[in-house]
Structures are given as C-alpha cells and as structure tokens.
Length: 526
Image 1: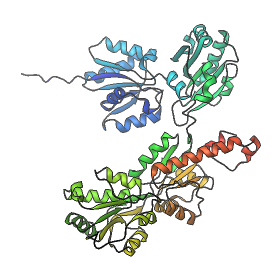
Image 2 (image 1 turned 180 degrees about the vertical axis):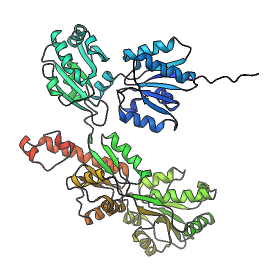
Image 3 (image 1 turned 90 degrees about the horizontal axis):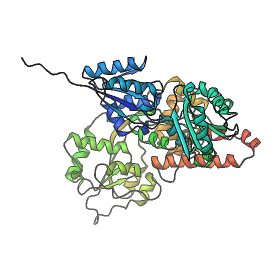
Image 4 (image 1 turned 135 degrees about the vertical axis):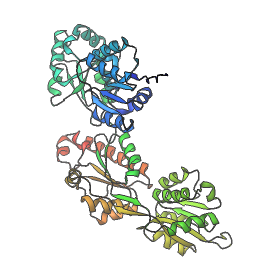
C-alpha cells in the first residue's frame, strides 16, 4: 500500500518595514501573496494590512499575534505541519524584536522549513521619511522594553552622531529621563514622529528637555530622533513637504477610472477619497454598435473619433466579442480629444493620427480637423462612438465641415448610488480640502447624490466644459490645467497648493490667522 505523502508547509518571518506599503520588499510581497495563514503584530499599520489583504489569496487567514513567543511559534509550526505556508508579519525588521528572535529559535529546533525576510527598521526608515539623517556614529533601534536600554551607550552615540529609537509614546518620559541622567545636554535637538511613513505622518521638533510636552497627543509607536541630524530637517524633510501633503481630496469618478488619479494624488502626499458618481453601462440596444463595428471592418469609415477612455473601451470590448483586433483598424484614421484618450488607444497598439495641440475639447479638435475633400477623402464618413448624454457640438461641427457622421451610443452613463452619510456630511461641511472634476457629468452627479462642496473646498476641473458646468452649479473654479488630462489636472492642483503655501508664508502671522485660505497648507502656518 502506497502512502500519500503530506505536503510540507513553510514558515516565513517577514519584516513589514516602517509602515508604508511601498517599502515592502519584493521577497516579502511574494511570501505574503503565497501565504495560507498570516499572523501579524500590533505594530503593523492597518493601512499596510489593507494592502496585503487585497493582494493575498482569497482563502488566506489573517489573525493577530497573541501570547508569548513560544505560543506564536507553536501556531506557525502547526500550520507548517498541516502543509500550510505561514507568515509572521512584524513591523520593521524581524530581528529587531527580541520576541521574534525567540520564535525563530523555537522554529529552528524543529524540522520545519523557514526563512527570515528582512525589512527596513522602523527607527531608521521613519527617520529618513522625517528628513533626519543619521550621520557619524549612528544608532537605530526598534525598542520593545525601554528599561533594558543602555542609556550610557545612547548618550555616547548622541555625542558623536545621531540616534533614532522606535518606542511607545507612553515611554517617552522614561527615555527623556534616561538620556538626561546619562549626561545628554538638555538643549540637544529632538524630533518625534507619529504615524511614521503613513498618510498623516507628523513630526514635531524640540529639545531633550521639552520633547515630551511637544509630543503631547501622540499615541502608539513613535520614532524619536536625537542629535545633529535633527537640525537638518528643515532642508531635508521631503515626505511631509510634498505639495498636497495631508490634503483630503475628493475623487468623483467611476471605480474603474479613479485608481490612476488616486495614485497620482498619493504621490503628491494627498489622501484621496474615491466616490463613484457615475456608472458605465452598455447601450440599451446593441444594434448601433454592431453596425458600427461591421462598418469599421468593411471600410465604411475614414475616421473614428474617440472622446473618452470609456468610448475606447466600449469599441474594443465589442471587437473582442467578434474576435477582432487592432489589425482590423487598417486604413481607418483615429482622432482623440485628449491625451488620456490617446493613451487608451495606444494601449491597444495603435497610434492616433490627430490629438489637438491646443485646447483638448470638442472645439479644440474641430479647430484642427480638416474639412471633407471629395478628391482627397474618397470615404467621407466619420464614426463617433460616445456616451448617450454627449453634447452635439462635435457632431454638428463635423457635419458643417462636409463629413457624414454616425453618432453612435457606445455606452450609457447612469448616476451612482449616494455615498455614505459621513462622506455626504464631509462634502457639505468642508471636510475635503479639494475636489477634482473630470467631466460635466461628475459635477452634475456629485451635486445630485451628495450636495454641493463647501465654499472652502478647492475646486479643480479638467477642462472648459467642466468649468462651465461647475459654474452653473454655483461652484467657484480654482484650478484648470492647460491640457485636459488627469496627470495635468493633478499637477495643476499641486502647483496651486505650492502657490498657496508661498502666499501664506509671506503673510504676517496676524494676516495668516485671518486668511480665508483653508486646508492643511493654511493650518501649518497658524
């Protein structure tokens, strides 16, 4: 009788780094994606866990680490013996925690396969995000037990360089007393950083004498930086000095489209909140699109004009239904209303022939679109696949230029369900620092499902038509990029924030307090 051999599981002790999900190493990411069971420490931020859960296997089990190191080790060993891949996810670096070292020792005494995946230590990583270099003799440690610290050695490190410690906020007073007792000068510079590498990271600078009072209100794990490096923070702080740092930005787009904009906003330090205001659905009757696709293949059209990414997606989905690909666009020229739409076309391996160099709108496209010439253009028909609520400007302008236009409904836009009550209240009360509108329909639908943004909210629009609609609804338009694209819109908002910061910095303190400028930029100067 042949016995079926039980699969062998693996154990991985994975360093989560200082908190920013982007600082997970590739090896750590691979271990987490392949895990059946993830045990995580309390020091791992919820924001990082959210990202990990989203990318993990659907059946992966996530549980907090509980009990002594021996208890955690038993859970990991049991999982491995059952053929599961188990991960213990810890903040910073695994070997930065005495308790994890004991777990590894316990696992090493068994036959279980295990690995230790390094991570950036909390103290060292957060110091870099706070703009505090650790030159000279440097000491960086993730501290679990403050009473075990060698303050004499720490004082030596401060005297010859810099120090970074990750500790619980409740232990700051004990650290201060220990440093002073070890002979550290009370006027030595100190930085205390909360929510290190997170969206709301905040650093306060003071001295050894006063940092406990300066950090009043900080909770959880904080990173303490001490020494000459703190004095360079004004010039080297980059994470908290990004243009939109701390700005809560409302992103009213479809779920499919919001991701790219949110990623760009996060790169500038903003905290995006995605609120779908429209949903894209197929046309009620597919006959028009069926005829349009057949016409494309049969050479019925000289041009296809795309006015949105959704239109591009709708045509390609219809192509896929019929087993067609980019080769069937041979001989047909493509025009796009803007760069974002052009990028969607390029993604399918086709280079558009026409993108407005000036205003990226219906008017801008018409200004550069040649009139129909019977000799040069033997095929005089244009396909215009659009939304069901599109304006007639483009179709009418093409007709005036002698073209026959097949204005086809490629997709429908319907109003999304209202957002949760807390988001509606934040929109109306000024809880958002900015809102980004990418079309007239996003303006109409946001106001319809959630109400008008508060007057203090910065309103940024992608182009002139969207600006007109925003004005019609009584909104003040603050930002409009020169080119109608998502990257340019986010860039314009970032530039506007920098401009606000410079204006506020130039104001006397009394004027700042009376300024109508709102949001994080203003608050930093008050």
